[in-house]
Image (cartoon, rainbow, N blue to C red; front, top):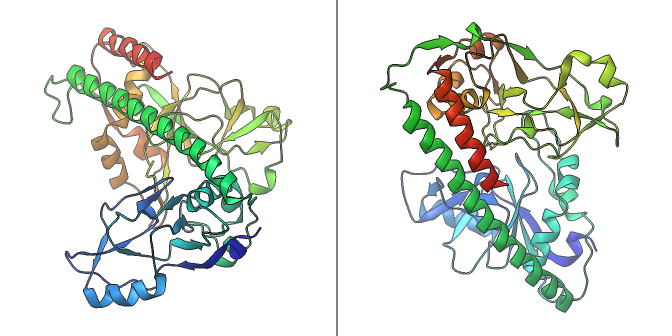
Length: 370
């Protein structure tokens, strides 16, 4: 069935949101507040009571409604719970009102999450993509009986609960690595007075090739390494929304090949979340063959005896380092940095033995992560 046949309506939030006030009990959320299975109320826009009433009449959000992000990071879906505070929305979020006798709200949420690739492929735009409500309304979903839906939801809720617990564990491990780094090497104030060297003193940076969307094919053994493969936490996800290139590109663009252990860095940030400008990662190909895409830089080391790559990645991941890099960025909706800005980053140079000790610690944590 199409979404328009299982919902009483599909609307979106305000196209011209009010300016807002400093603080109030009347909240307006955007796509930045909507995640899979989760709605957050961090950094909302606060409205006056009059503005809120006007906006709420249009969006008509009720418990059991399903929210779907349709601008920016599209395809994230969550259900409105009865214990949530009242809120209204900006146009980056669609509100789906499922018919209770046809479709369970949480079933619809999971079904939409399963359609994310479809939604992303139908989103249009350059700096910030979006999908029209009509296209959302025409999405086809498999709709079994409500009792079967409830059984499916029970299983998926358990899976989501386990996944959430594992994600919390991974976050604890990430925090452990960050804390150990600061303990060993200090923070921005450089309390140990380590010598500072520019990145250009021990490595160069290679920009990726500007592959076009027309280059992509349905399947092959060659993948395009894009910014989306670099995860906000510094991980490398080889299977994240893969884009395949023709087999002969592996030889044609040999100079853009990546191998396990290569350090790459995101050189562009999008207007939508997540912000990844300056996030480095170490390539772990999982057996795939990757070619480097534009706006992703590869560090080419000329002296491996000066800088441990695991240490360097953790250093470049420090928030103050990334903020400093962002200050040199150009652009508005899509900000980016060039090769000189990256190579101009000043890096602490502690003894290599200490860097190697940190790498061994990270490896032990990675075993727990795995």
